[in-house]
Length: 298
Image (tube, rainbow, N blue to C red):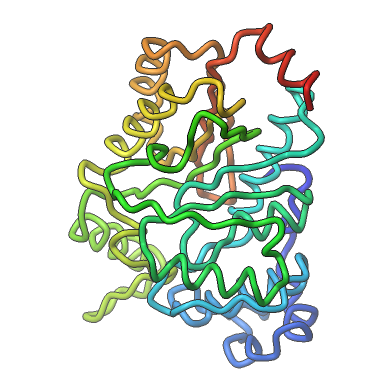
């Protein structure tokens, strides 16, 4: 994990239950006499992450439908910390505005980015119900002045209809859909539950999630290449474009495409959370002169 990540050690369940008493019913001692939860239980996972965001990020209201994806806080904040480090390397330290592609019903990245670094956000989603859920969270936490929502009406587009010639973002972030369809998502869930020793006749995702959150026609690779291409249409509107990339095999084709599209710098940032390995790919189309002008005008 990133050195600034607050979740490097075991969960302090006593502290978490004090912030969110509903978590207590899901906590038990395992055979090693260690407190834990059943990570195959979607409700237990949601209760744990609700307790984490309340305890460590002072988010009092974080409610969204159980059918929507529940983001794991330690992994999501890790992305935020790595983005902060990336911006620091470019001397972007003030007036940071982030474009969050696919914010979801939980609005997780804007909440964490604002809580930890006081960043402002424009958060997008193609699903109106997710936008409504995110808006309720923003209003309840009195964050309307720093987090703005935009509906993406075309599910085939990423930046089109969101960015215009007057837009200016320090960085874009994205956690893309992993799967090409629901069948592939179901297979992945089955493998995960089998690994946890919790495979039953009734398979449910332990982090929940709806099709529009998990799937994109052609899978992660197709989404990423749409993301790359559309970013090249707005080369000077965003300093850094970034995305999480689950499948490392996609990196090679991304680098090749970005080079053809005119990216001046491409970075791959490794991320590790326990046994899970992921990475962030970051790129900019700005020349050195354009980068310096950006910094000078901030």
